Structures are given as C-alpha cells and as structure tokens.
Image 1: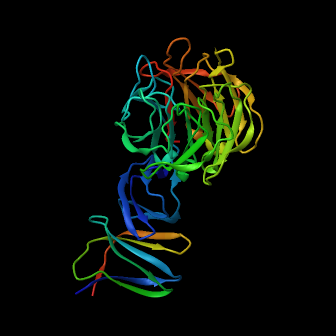
Image 2 (image 1 turned 135 degrees about the vertical axis):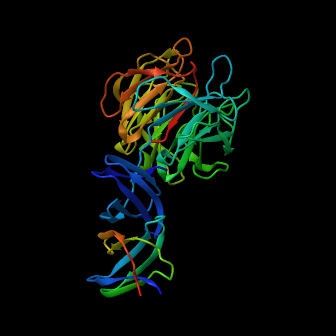
Image 3 (image 1 turned 120 degrees about the horizontal axis):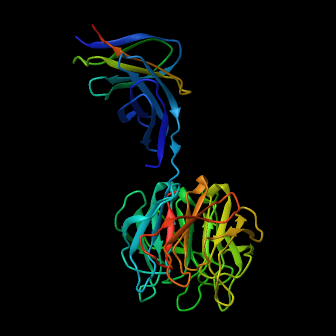
Length: 363
Length: 70
C-alpha cells in the first residue's frame, strides 16, 4: 500500500489504527521504542497508542502520507533476439539490477508507464517479429511475471509513454505502424482493458521519448524521427483528451532517446539518442515542464548511446538511464540528480546488456 | 447484570470502546455534552481501552479501564 503513518516512540506501545469512515480497526500492532512505519489505506484515521500500563495517547483526523516509490523496472529490449526480461533497481541506491520476471511477450521498442506510488507498471506496444499492440502490466513492488492488460488502439513500436502518476491515466504517443504515427491513446492504469483514443501529436514520428510532471498533469513528447531527425517537443494535458500543442525544441533532432522527470518538481530531462549523421549522442538536456520553451543543456551521459530507457524516483530527484546501444549493446545504468545540471555518474549494470528497452517506476 | 462505562463529557464526542483481550471494537457511538452511560452487554468484556474523539480530531483515551457491573 502506498500510504503510511509513521513517527517515533519512546516506549513500546500497541498502536491501533481506526478508519474514521466506518470506525473499524484497520491495523493493530505492537511497536517498539524507535521509529515506526505502518502502511495503511488512504483515508482519515484515528490512531491510538497504548502503553502496557494502560496509559494511552492518540490523535484523530490523521491523513496518511503518500509513500513515494523507489523501485525502477526495465523491461524488454533486444540483444540478438527480442527479450522478455524485466530487471529492477532501487533508484536511491546505486548497484546492479536484479531479475524481476518476464513480460507476457518478448519484444523490443516498447514503452512503459505507471500510476506512480499506486504501484502498477504497464508496458505497451513494441516489436515481436510483428508489430505489437500488446499492453501488459506488473505490480512494481512485487517481483513476478507480467499479466495481460489489453490492446493499444493500433499496433506500433518505438512509441513513447507517460502518465499523470497516481491520477491514473497513462498515455502512449507516436510510434511506427509501418509508417510514422501521430496517434496518442490512453488507458486507466488501475483498470485493465483496451486503450482509447486521446488525440494526435503535432507531428507524426517514432523513436520519441515522453515524460510528465506527474499529478500536475502535463505530458511531454520529445524528439523522434519521421524522414528526418525531429527536435519537436509537444505537450498534452493528460487528464483531458485532445491534440498535443507545441512546447518548444530539443537542442538537436534526436531519435531513440530516453526521458524522465522529477515529477511534480517540474523538471523533465531527455538523454542520449542518435542525431543527424547516425551519430550517437551523450547529451542530456532539460525543460521546465509547466513552461513552454526550448530545452537547455544539462550535461552528458557516461557514454553516448541510443535505444536507452529512463525513469526516476520522482520528487526524490534521481533520474536513471539504462541500457542502449553504444556500438554494442550496453548494460550500463547511469544516474543524475534531476534538479542539478551536471554529467551522469555510474549507477550499476542491467542483468543483461540490451537496447530498445523501456523503463518505469513506482514513484 | 450488565457491564457499563459511565462518566461525563464537557463536549460532544465520539466514544470508541476497544476490548483489550483482542483489540476489537466493542462499542462506537456519539454522545452529547453531559452524562453518558455505555452499555457493554451481559458478558464481561474484561478491561477496555476507551477513546474519546472530538469532531476536530482531538482525542483522549485511557487503557486498563474496568467496566462496572450494574
């Protein structure tokens, strides 16, 4: 559960959490004299602490705190064949990725979204030998294989996805259907089912990247390719279906790049990709998501690469870029502090080197 | 023979009675300012934890409360 009540205790106490909507006991535990953390549902609580001698204290009208997740998941990709592998990291702690489970279908050039702290990650589209309309999902905090979710409105790959976090809408934009697509479709992340039509990008393209400012509701699509390398950034209001509007430009037309953000703190970053002349780039640039404008230089990845994936731990401010192609398939994960422009630093390794993968998190 | 908890409150409150043997809720009701008497039934519930919660959330409570028999 992504909500908690926490604090510090000077004595061992029994903590009884009462749900104020129906005055039932939601949890009843003994907590030692130290910091404690109780995961609860999202509604007002009366919390009672009772010492062994009967002395008691407590408060009503307590609003549980939303727990911002810290797990990043990378899924799919290609090495010599399409991959169904998913691996995960704890974003705040550098180290190598661990096995998570398998996608329902091995595929590359897919994208991923999540409903943030509500813990559902969704992978959409991709290429399996054929172009795929598959959407499958995981519970990010629980290692396991993915489960079928539904279908995109049209099968496509090298598409991009983002969401408005706990507000529960995921969007998938652009991609290649055999030709470049301007389609944006959407899902309600907590409810399995097929995607619905959302609107159109300002320009058809594939190999683009997407991010958002989370519950502040602005989704951004940047870069891609459609006959030439695109520097277009366009945006949508995720909660309102409609066509995208112009936001500004990346520093260079870039294909197969990665993008993430620090959530409601409003900074989006784009990293890596391939620029004109099929040159691999290590450039990271950034935008302020709520303010339309061109991107600004942020710093460099540890290695130039395309076909990478990016995610973050949201307002906790760490962005990670994983995998990609540097001339060979890469297992590199590197990270940035999203609020502070600078070069990326080594984080660890994926469980297997691959390119054209996707990433999301429960932040 | 019934087990009761009684007292007086200076404000309207919700009183929640929690059975200390299994931490389940035995009684949950609102009371106006003044005297109150809570009937806990004919079975001895053992000691209880009594929680008083005002509408603004401010709460006070006591454990090891022994219901009286009347």
